[in-house]
Image (cartoon, rainbow over all chains, first blue to last red; front, side, top):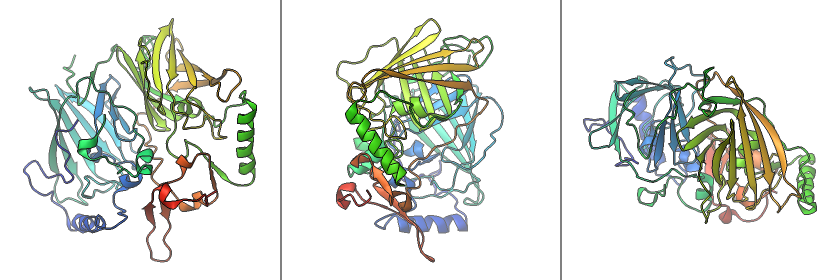
Length: 203
Length: 264
């Protein structure tokens, strides 16, 4: 579970991500859209997938299951998951999709996952930071001495950002807790938000 | 071996170092990428009780009249038994000493099978139910109860209830290239006796799963000639196509704010 759930992510230096002119225009449009009654920029509102990396910033737990051929991420938001290919071969994306085409390898005790083929239908964070279909996402995952999982996200997307940039999240272990089934359409049918506020998340 | 230290919630280690489809694999290791041999969209000749048969016949009549029948599956809330009957494409299996996790591509779903465990006494009904498994020789037997009765078994609307009980028998081939699966359904609420279907999963060379994103495009035109088996299946969000230079738009409204049954 995340130690924080940023609606807007900043770089590791606490700076705004370096948007290009095109990226800035799109971000401003998303910010304006967020003030309307039926925002269109955030597809999670109608339970469509948040995609990577946004799902890692959301207030829902996840589990990681390490096998040799696959590393699985089982998310607590509407049945999403990722099966990271550990074959050592580069990704071979077909059509852009929310979770992309993740491939992983170990560098000592750090799991490195590189994903491409991430659809621009999704956004990077809840505030609406955009990305293109050509974004390359690198994640470096390691566990620090205090037991917390760290993930450093590196985003390379020349269409939307003038330079690669990085942000980092930390996560804590929930002892004895399992990720249970979550069905978003039932939640919004009850009039609840598609993404539960951080304090109301029930793993 | 690498220090496997990654974990946000629970750390789960692999049982065996064998790759999923190695020839010398552990017969009790199903981990890896699998693919349904073919897609089934119906259960043939289920032993429906008369009232249930009348209900299903009614859906068939609506289909013949040109209506779309909306089920738990098509309303993006399928149950585990849907995946047993109608799995499409790949299934990623992850395995640990005490649990098997199945990541289904379509319908997108994460099932957990607790090995050598018991069902809890007071189960809260759910779409996935509660699954426990054990090995009988080289066959994995999975027992699931605790369904919520809020989904149909196939595209023709076969009903399910909270009394449904399923038993899956997964038998991998000796070469690890195939799993033969027999699923037995028991639901005295709607069926006169247990019935079974057979399925086959093949070892897959695919390295990535397709992200089946059921909710991404709730098109208004699809709902205009739809019959919803349950009110729950009515869409909360609908996409309206723009005219001229107007952009298309997805509008979310709670079903109880809309009222009526105009979509039927």
